[in-house]
Image 1 (cartoon, rainbow, N blue to C red):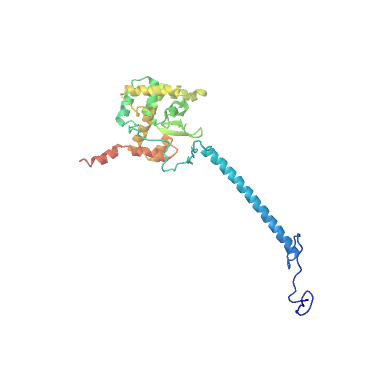
Image 2: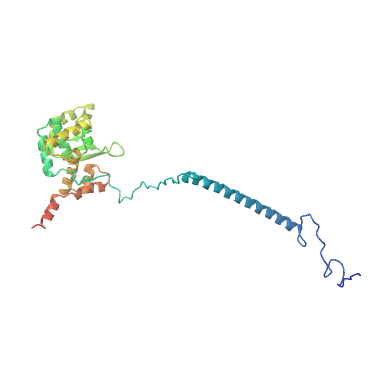
Length: 295
């Protein structure tokens, strides 16, 4: 029995017409899909598949690195599970407020005073009057000029200015050489230097003898000479040292009302904050103010 198609018209545009059955075993665009669109879809799918493979390989490589690092830090299975210590980040630049200024202080860690009082300095100078002449002038220079021991030992004939009444020191703690400062000293010191070391006689000559040092000693020899004077004066402790004489000079200057900027120049400090530590010492003026509370 034959079935007849009741649709109107024949051919491809006929309503109810069935599409031809696709051939098996061939890859191609489906019905109604252009070949160009199909090619682009295949290319996009291939790229996506390749990208997924690369991501998977990267993930496996990362997993191997993590496993390797964990093995180093944790150890082998069954072994000790000690982890390697993690070094904290340490900042080597402390804030300016917490950093000490050049390590300067008028007291040692136990609270002992590191400067000589006026009476102790007078006792030191009295002991120097009975010492060897060159030892006496070195002790007087440290007490009256407030210089460092190394700066005093580097003093030469031509840097003693008798006319101006100053000693010219080279600041040896500066970052560069050739930086000098003039410090006014009392006439008694200038007279002693001229008498013992022949300042005028050497300065009147021409030649290299004007540049010879007043004390051709090593730093240790100079330190021992000052230490012997301290012992002769009955002084001992952290303040009985050349550094104690320098601190005593700073404290005495502040007590006498010398401006800090001028004292900074005399001491050869790079920062005014370093010089300001001498304002923390108890001077005569501060004692007079405090004595009013006791009346």
